[in-house]
Length: 204
Image 1 (cartoon, rainbow, N blue to C red):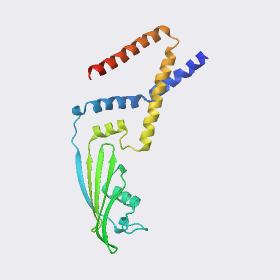
Image 2 (cartoon, rainbow, N blue to C red):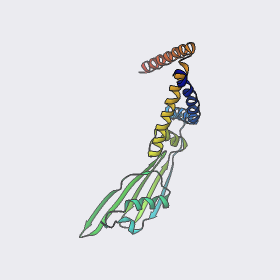
Image 3 (tube, helix red, strand yellow):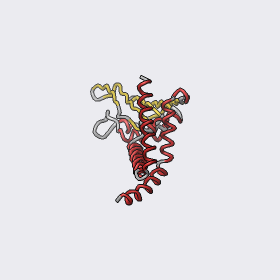
Image 4 (cartoon, rainbow, N blue to C red):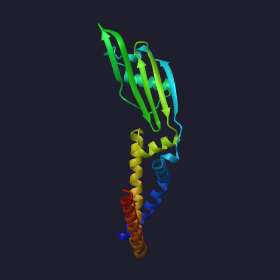
């Protein structure tokens, strides 16, 4: 039984290490950029785009004062290069006898290292899109944190974590028959754990 487990652990250890090699390098490097933001100060790039919104996007079939959210978001992505995850629409409307007196739509788009704010005047159908790109380091940092990255990247992080745990677990399994190496490894593990706790307590 032990030999069978060992025979399975070795290829799993090898292949998970290779599968997650670049991922571990990525998280190690971005761990430094997150921990030392003053070392990697970028210059955000802002952009303001003005555009005219078609009337049919500012109303839905059920309500002439309620925008067609899905179609409006798609139009903004195509004509202003906004990207990321769109927030729900915030709509302010003032009307009198079924006539629009004042109306404004606002929403945000958020992505890794990116933020955009959209304001639309429903009377004159004019829209403003103000976007900020915080740079490559901010983009990488947000990928590390899974911030504004969407569900697919979140699943990728989960899968990477599972593979890393398999890599660690199979490494321990491979050490079990090697008593001297295992004992040495346990001593190093104890030292690393004690050093981590000590550094944390000293820093408080």
